[in-house]
Image (cartoon, rainbow, N blue to C red; front, side, top):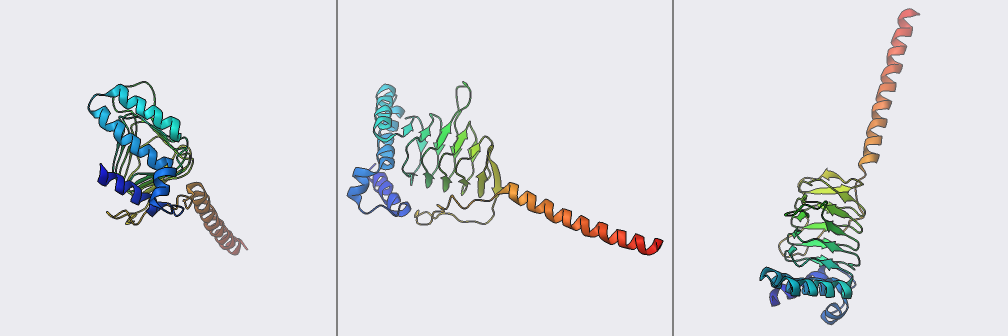
Length: 224
């Protein structure tokens, strides 16, 4: 537990340029408080002390504005930036080296029991206000754009944008190493698949217009 806490503090330094000292992180960072209280609640939850675990999670929510069900499984190197309004459901599974921004929801759909919340792989960034709903899987090294709503599985090395979210696969991209020193936090730099499609259509129209003009010229020369 102590090693995990040290790693949680180190992650804040690496991903938040505003962090100045360990004391500041311990006293003033709600994301750090939330993950610390969750690790305690999750340990109790695993030992079937469910009521106490839920009480700790409610205290966590009151103090930080971050709601994490004690049943959620969270890996190492987890970081919540600002964090107000973050919701993480009971059967959520989060891998290592994952970053969430404020307003993110990792939620369920419907009233089905069992696995009903998302599974996030390693080295993932989820932008502000994004919603990942249902038992979907988000592949390693992916980014979820701010405000995106993800309802389907996302392959590894992808960026997801839009409502509903659309994945753009990017190959051969290394977002993070095992020391958590390289993280792609530029969640504002996102592709625009709609604009890309419009540009593609525009190029095809221009090609067709040139072809039509050429054929008309040939036809006019033959009939003239």
